[in-house]
Length: 254
Image (cartoon, rainbow, N blue to C red; front, side):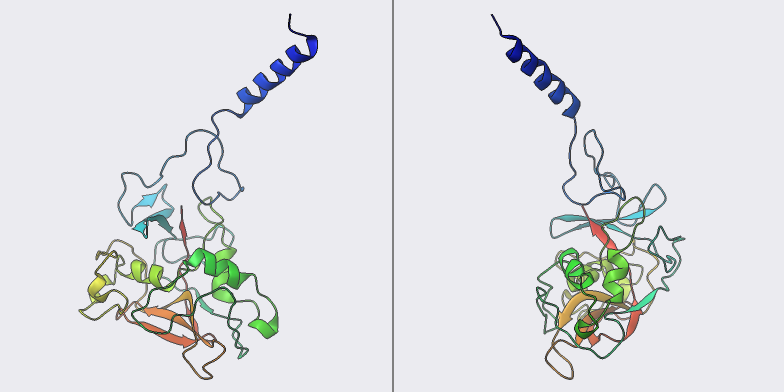
């Protein structure tokens, strides 16, 4: 005969498992409320091409380094609280650091020194390290990375500033990718390798976009005073001092 205490334990355990069943967690990222809800996780970009919209908002970004991507549309307003994003040409510009000459080499980010080198860390790792800094002696509030780190859009709050390699991938699938020639982008000439070549991601301006990848190339050479940016009008990857104002486009991987 089953004792009363064992019977109660059996009922409690049964109810517990019934209430917790069917909940799955998506591989990475959360929505704006910080949870993934119940039911089976599905790929919102399944059956869609790079540049296609999800529910009229987020753009599917394809696959790079075995990660699937979403990209914010072009022409978003300069806000991190669900900005309007009509899909027009980008206009939001930010400095890489706080705009002052207070050079600081961000710990944990691998500096990339030559044009053909890819970024070691992807932008989600680098953005978190950069945005965590606010001390004026350490570069202050880093505007470009913080803008993406604080972004809430399309039901997601895990947007970030692309790395050098991710930004190259975006260019090679952007409305300006036809500007790539045999030698550009330097990391993947003529958008070869894993990057592809298409014109499906719209809204990019023929101008310079910040990446989250640092370099010690510059004056003074150490600590890092420069970061990598990508010129979408020519396909070139170049270094610039962190005080400059360049365009920003946020992405997320899932």
